[in-house]
Length: 522
Image (tube, rainbow, N blue to C red):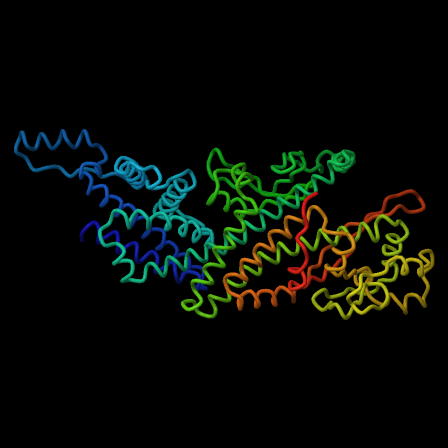
């Protein structure tokens, strides 16, 4: 079997097997299928790269070129049969391909691109193959699939450039369609994790701004554990976002000796760093600082636009299920952005209408005395609750002042209990806010402006690509509830500061939202 045929056969088997891995439910069978994917992909890269290297110079695939020439000379001198020489290994073939391309292509822009991320993926594939061949390995299926999807993007460029008629081979056996499907699945994951990580960083930075206004808040956090016995005090490390030594580690995620990430959460800025976040950095960035520098609203939008373009390009190619998945991805990202926007509006509402009026906050807190049974949040509808206190048409913000004045917070009146508070305290406290009316009354909070800009940009881009799609997505988004739990507080008669949470649902209609003028930074 020729070297090129050997490699192409393994490549085809690897991708075709990877296609069905997600459909296998039996764990043992799934492991076996993923093992075949890894071994075949590793073998295909090594053999196809050796084929490409041989086209440049057959001696470059030999492990010890000097020794090979010496042996070859002796066979000529002594008229003996040539000895078989050892060929280069997997990583050697990777290095030589990129060096040869650099030598052949003078235009730097046209050279094959390789960075620490891609090189790390080659090394990871080699490590996984060796572990499977010589010992054992525990698969993270989605992660392995994303790694392969990223590698394939680079491999296809190499093969199309240096393997004759590769495009005909790939088209003939459906490789391009299979690879595109894998890349689209990977794009969904990258979009989802990138959006979540981006917004966690944004929210952490917003929390830092609050703490920076009053340095005493930091001291409260630092002193919170001082009363605990020494053996019960948590061990903290430095948070990568706020820089405070209040990050509680739950595990380590090790990429290499230079990149070891702590999985956990920060008690100060509330930043949560997960295994998926670490995997995203491993696959897309050269470390945490590179991620902070490059993961921004523009990059997030580009990821979303790729998905929107994919819908536009695939409307007549995708199955209805595939199209629905792509639409769900965009809804998911837009929902996060709109949810954060609504949370900032909810925070503004709670502060302006409740927290800054001590008696109003205390009145809501005292509703806990009248709570009796737990409420199922999934069954909580706008019409069930009204505006949280008293009855309403469900569209007006609650008139907290009137409600507070009508409540004697120092007596548990049975009549009051029956009239107003026959439900759980959470339901009684629950505030329903009209986004449009709140914005017109107080404007958009500064921390919500960026979320607003991102949402409008995406919605306008959707309108320009496919109006029918945009209408479907807006309808889906308008059916969602944007619920947040906003911190409030009051001072009681003993001078103690009591903190509690207020459930706030912000009603946002996308059609109305797009008509509002986009706020500007002042």
